[in-house]
Each structure stands twice: as C-alpha cells, then as structure tokens.
Image (cartoon, rainbow, N blue to C red):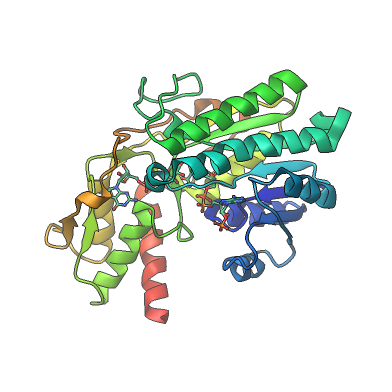
Length: 325
Ligand code: NDP
Ligand code: GDR
C-alpha cells in the first residue's frame, strides 16, 4: 500500500487531495499543527481513515518524527501561510513557514531516507504569485519569476529549493506552479469565497453590501478538485519536473461579481459593492493567465470546471449553508 504524508491537510487543497489519495488506495497521513486545531473535526469528517500527526513546518525535529511514524512513499507539502495580503504584515513568519518550512521538510526527508531519498517522492505547492509582475503572457514554466509580495518571495525560495534538492541529491522532487483554484471549501478571506458568501447573504436579506479592494486585477481561476489531481499525477511520473497548472482563461474581479450576482438574479451590482482602500495591497499582481500545455501533454491533465460553473457552485453552496444556519 502506498503511503502519503500531506502537510496542510486542514486546508482547502489538503482535504481534496486526501479524498483523492484515499480513493486511489493510499494510506493517508496528515500533519496538523497546534495543540487544539479547530479544523480537526472537519478533517476527521472528510477523511475518517486518515491518521493525523502533530507537528509544525517550522520545527524540523517534529517533521523527522512525523516522517518516521508515517514512513511515506509520497510527501505533499501544501502547508503554508497562504494569504497574500497577510504576508506584508507578517513577512517574517510567512518566510519561516512558507519558505523555510519547505526547506525544513526537504532536509528532514533527506535525513530520514538517507541513501534512499529518491524513494520518497516530494511535491511542492508553488504558486502563480511567483510570476507577480508578469514578464510574459501567458505565464509558463520558463517565465521569469518577479514576485510582488513577501508570500510570492517565500514561494519562489521554496520553488528553487525544491529544484535544488532534485539537482543536488537526485530527489524525486516536483514543483506544481498552480494558478488560483477555488471551491466551496475556500477560506473566507480569499476574494472568490468572500464574494460567494456575501452574495448568498445578500440574497437572503442578511447583508446589505460588500466592501472590496481593487476590482481590476485579473486571475486564472480553476476548481481545486481538478488541481489536486495534477499534484498526484506529477508524482506518478518516472522523472520529477515542474508544471504550470491553470485553465488558460483570465477574469477580473468585476467578472467574478457579474457572475456571482447574476446567480441570485441581480444584473447591476453597483449598489451592493463598496470600495474600501483597506483591501488594496502595497503591490498588486495585475494579470495572471497560465499556459498549462506541458501538464496537458505530459500528465494528460486538463480542467473540468469552467469559471461560470465554479462561481455558481460556490454561490449555491453558500446559499445552502446560509439557509441551514
Ligand atoms: P490553505 O490556506 O487553505 O491551507 C494552508 C494549510 O497550511 C493549512 O492546513 C494550515 O494549517 C497549514 N499551515 C499553516 N502554517 C503551518 C505551519 N506552521 N506548519 C504546518 N502547517 C501549516 O491553502 P490552500 O489549501 O488553498 O493551498 C494549499 C497550498 O497551495 C498552500 O501552500 C498555498 O500557498 C498553495 N497554493 C494555493 C493556491 C490556491 O489558489 N489555493 C494556488 C497556488 C498555490 P491550519 O489549518 O492549522 O492553519
Ligand atoms: P491571491 O488571492 O492573492 O491571488 O492569492 P485573493 O483571492 O486573496 O486575491 C485575488 C485578487 O482579488 C483582489 N481583491 C481582493 N482580495 C481579497 N482577498 N479581498 C478583497 O476584498 C479584494 N478586493 C480585491 C486582490 O487584490 C487580488 O488581486 C491566492 C492564494 O490562494 C495564494 O496562496 C495562491 O498562491 C494564489 O492565489 C495563486
């Protein structure tokens, strides 16, 4: 039986990946931090067969202990401080977790596996935020990285460190450069979920308006359930590599508002959306659109959920949740 260790199992992607790996017959282990993590019941409900092990990406000895206990054939490093806006206010801890945490895990795997370090396959959750001030449209694996936030800088460090461990020690270490991916499980701080939750509450008369920042930024949004399959496919290849995972379509925050409000029968949302400069960022990433042709050709991966369908799925899920609360 294959054994997988997932860091960040309490997050959006961790839950979808855990479900995929369980369905593929893996024994799943998840790293959970904190002495009383409030998301444990959620993980236990979605992944009743998974074994949860306690540790923290900033504590290498805890990672070594978790590796010994799980003895994984595949390690997926999804753990990170992942909210870009937060990373300016907390640049140092973002660097400790999102950048150095990846190095701690790579090093722990090397120490754990000894001469057999190519026997443990490693996935690093890299990000389109690394492209930042995009130097090419669309962005591909070879596009120059120009991160615009402490989060993007931290992810760029982890991306290069993953490549370095592959080249230095022959580790089967792959980096997935994933563009934004969303779902009803998305954290409420991210713009898609913030909008879907607010729109559901507006539809039910429980909220009057929503405060937003820059509506002109454009993102390549896909469905998280599709994207975790790409992670798994990367680790099934004979050789480790780096892949862009994206839909190849880009939409502005205005487009997101159009589709979300349309779902509740509102064509003109201007009276419901307020500008609030607190949601502006010190440096913005204006345009992201990915070229996933390498993932399509080498992994046979392609997205199954389009933008409109994704937004409708999220608004519908939040309407159900609001009605049930
Ligand atoms: P989430 O923010 O939903 O999940 C992040 C996870 O990291 C949580 O499980 C969190 O645990 C965990 N974590 C935070 N700090 C630590 C720590 N010190 N030690 C161990 N674990 C920690 O992110 P997503 O699921 O959306 O994303 C998964 C990964 O993919 C992240 O690395 C993210 O940066 C990256 N990514 C995401 C994209 C997206 O669009 N979703 C796109 C590209 C990359 P806790 O619940 O305890 O806080
Ligand atoms: P992002 O996602 O920064 O792309 O990072 P987020 O949804 O936070 O922002 C997307 C864009 O929306 C603009 N925006 C707002 N954003 C939020 N959160 N709240 C608002 O009110 C608001 N108004 C406008 C932002 O300025 C931005 O341009 C996500 C995370 O999952 C990262 O971890 C991941 O690596 C990248 O996607 C790819």
